[in-house]
Length: 264
Image (tube, rainbow, N blue to C red; front, side):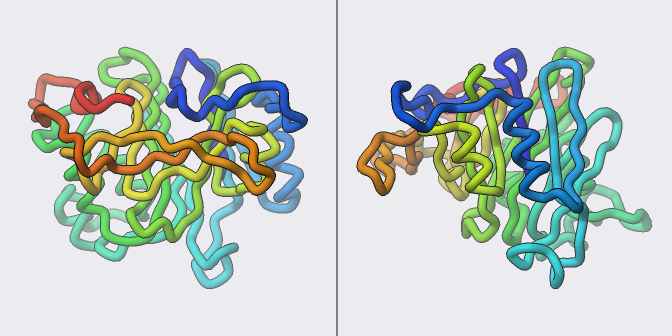
């Protein structure tokens, strides 16, 4: 899986940007996309959007055959697109919760429906909805229009067990890069890449936040690679720093505002 979002769509946390000047130079989005296709020449596909976004995925496979033993899915509905890797153990109960019984639904479509419900009318904080997803997973949602056509939005998350690998970083032009392939992420982002923090979610309007511990802020820790060079940052829950309040989201409010008090 690969997702690239230019700065007009999303901004990566500042801590991911490592000092320039090393031999590991970041690449431009089109070069990173070509690298992903080269790494998966037989079954990778991608789509680009005029607003400054691109999504790529390896063709869907049964869990028993997929690389790493997890499913890969890509789907779109009402101009909302989701790349999902892994599995949800409680998919059946979530389908009933979101009124999807009797329909052909997989994990990616369920995540789109959950996102759309939160965006338009959900009364629950986003962290609680993501926490209700039981399983080992990582996903990226791209909303090409946003609420009421207000603009594109990005939403990404990784399960608390970190069982499905996910990495992110910053391309040469400042684009956010999210990828499960460590080699592609490292080559594309140079020193400005790091593992995506498990148990966290990222939204283009509010930044990075822990859904496992939503009342705690995240802190960025210096990350040093095997060569002793600063390389991105690891984000950890700060057990001693609480967020003052967790705003609830009403039916007339954009659910992305739930990140405002916790933005990085």
